[in-house]
Image (cartoon, rainbow, N blue to C red; front, side, top):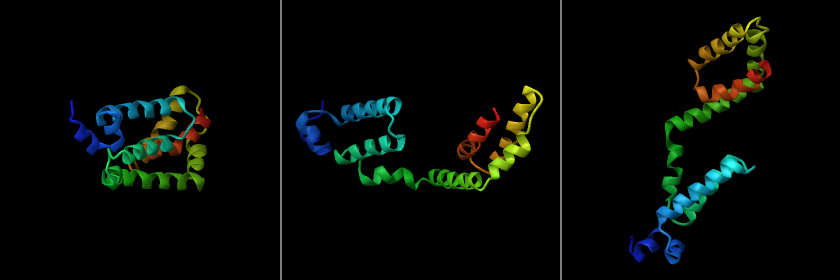
Length: 142
């Protein structure tokens, strides 16, 4: 059990209520998961609200809250989402869908026509934006 002065240092209101920072964070995580699963709110709003609550209660420093944005991998995936959206908006994905997917005669042919272009494109871009970019056309193809 933590002494009361450590509660106050970790978060003023938490110390007054007698809630440990660990239990508060666990409860907040459960609440965030609940909202992600059952709410119509956008996931980015829910997750940003969770981080903001941790910032307000002093359980997370601003440097820690923004630390994930400094990761090169995160920035690369974000940029590739922009590239993927640009390719989709200019009609590049529609061209690929019409010319490559076509009208296969068998199930194996359909799978091959979907997999081969995705394998080729995944050599040049991250899989996450590739899936986001190709999903609408693959859904139309199905």
